[in-house]
Image (cartoon, rainbow, N blue to C red; front, side, top):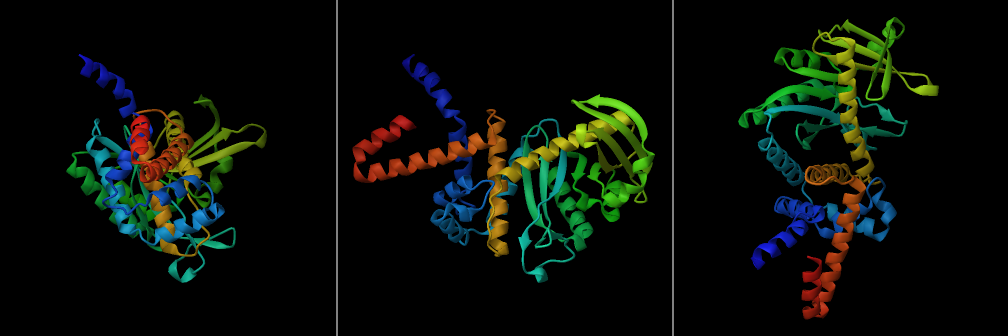
Length: 357
């Protein structure tokens, strides 16, 4: 009887989200050489530059040299497969999101537009799973020049993975970088629904041809709508939403078939929900002024990896990203304190660990 009561008392502590998060991190330590001081520096530098941490940031950059990019990608894929196995409704949607990588050496890149006239970007395809849980499946470098060929290759790999778990891909989301005729035609041939943000040159001639509508959905009022056939074979959907004193805003995207205004509004809101997930990544992403492409890529991959852990933990307990990050930092600081105390006073260290665990 006493054992059962003790089990009930300890259960809440075992479900603590920080403990669960660290358990997930250490599960993949066999694939990633992830020093704790690097983890702490990354969490402290979220949304800003590592260099602002001074000596701690410089040590973190040195530690990045010991991490293998392929190991981080492998860990991301393993976490993704874990979520795929747990998908209950057997249906998934994938989001392809471009994440720019900046570097001064333009010989490494191809046909990439400059960012604010100073730096250049290498598009990285972040495959984002939308289901009962959200998670990043993988991150692949890709150039705009070969985006159609690389997209087909990635899709084939994704479809093979989904087939292993008897899952069905029902929709593909994509940034405007993927609004390419070859990509659209490939998805049409697959028979998969998609929502891909349109480029401005695709819809600029239609802005004054929208018919007036008045629909409010999720607190947003839409006042204009148009659905026309695109040269790629898809349909171009254009919505005008009311954005207050700043005037009207235009939302345009490509879909696989003709839709009415209500369906278009729902798809627009769904797409915006996906963007919010990536906005969380932007707030969390660690930046560095180094020109080492490898370090930049590792940093991005580690941020995806940590954000995946937050996604998983959030499915058990609702917690904000900054709370999650701060809790992990505090936990690691306490862990260091326990180790220091244990080295000096073993008995005190044992009691200290018991009380906090």
